[in-house]
Amino acid sequence: MKILHYLKTMRLEEGGVVRAVLDFCTALAGASGGASGGGHNVVLMTFDDLDVPKDWPRVAASAAWDQPGGRPSVVVLPRPSKPGGRFDAGAMAQVSAAVRAADVAHIHAVWIPSNMQVARAAARAGTPYIVTIHGMLDDWSMSQRTLKKKVYLALGGRKYLESAALVHSTAEFERRQSVKWYPKGRAVVAPLLFDLQPFRNLPGPAAARRAFPLAASDLPKVLFLSRVHEKKGLPHLIRACRLLKDAGRPVALLIAGTGEPAYVESLKTLVREQGLDNSTEFLGLVTGETKVSLFEAADLFVLPTSQENFGFAPIEAMASGTVAVTTKGVDIWPELEESGGAVIADPEPAPLSKVLGELLTDPDRRTAMGARARAWVLDRLDAGRVVGEYVAMYERAAEARRNH
Image (tube, rainbow, N blue to C red; front, side, top):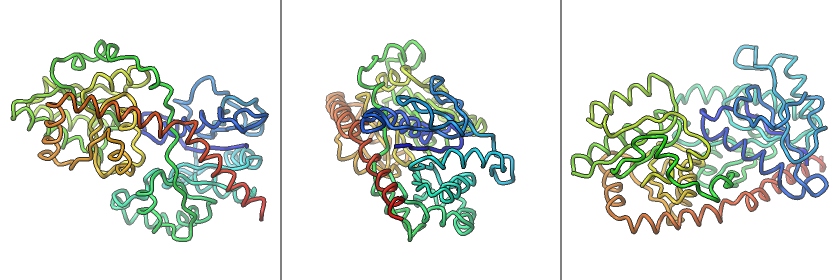
């Protein structure tokens, strides 16, 4: 199949959606059942390809589907130049050229005006499109800037969703929260594709201990690794660590990720106010093998978030054999809890510190849970298993096109 993915910017610092799109493209290009029995013909369309692998060929939109299989091709569009982040006529000509020959277009996210332009181009070309909403219609998300989002839906956002061949949620919990915003749409649930290759042969904790002083500390190590954003609950975690210190159980807190500089500075101020500056380290963006090593170096991974869609970071921690502590703000929390390798906690400092303290004083429990976590991820989220759900989804959308 000819499968087109569109996400406006490909910067890993922006969070899990970018990681998801890269994994989608990689898995589909390598999945059996494509051209000549090999991978499918996959094109990624974006206007910022910063973190797209350099060995994925950059091609003109007019030649997007002429490349040999095995690796995704990349169409880099001009940046939107019209008000509201919309493409001009020249960019839209490239979009139309790319979508015209596709069997299906897969558009990521909701609140992006250029997404609606890509969807309209697909509709004009008779190419079915699928929208993955990535948690953006969850109840918590819709409680933020509610009026602005309702206006956006009324001015075309709802039509964008309801005209899609399918609207994709990554968990049943997400689907139940979101469908009220596109009542005439066609909802479907499938877990995100997740590239497990970096986790199959774990590198060990040594690299992280060399890179980050506190990762080599004798204190129990608590890791936060995610985008540094207000919704992620870092103030709760910092205060929980202070409560542990007051109880005579100090920990080393490792904070990996980037965010708005002013917000990061406010967290550093809170760390100093809580008297934790000697036991807290801000690591910035950590990627690649060092990231996997960091998960292994941690005694616990903690994400006390208000809202998270699929939750790549807890999954990555579990794939590394590290117990994840997170909240019901993660859409896949029932699945994580059922795995036996994660604990779902109240994010407030007092109950969170109680959960952390219980786990940190029971290494045998952590070891057993970590083993269950890793086994569950490697089995349930194997890309070879999950990719079939997406191919079936694309075929369902393409079949609807053929029948009209």
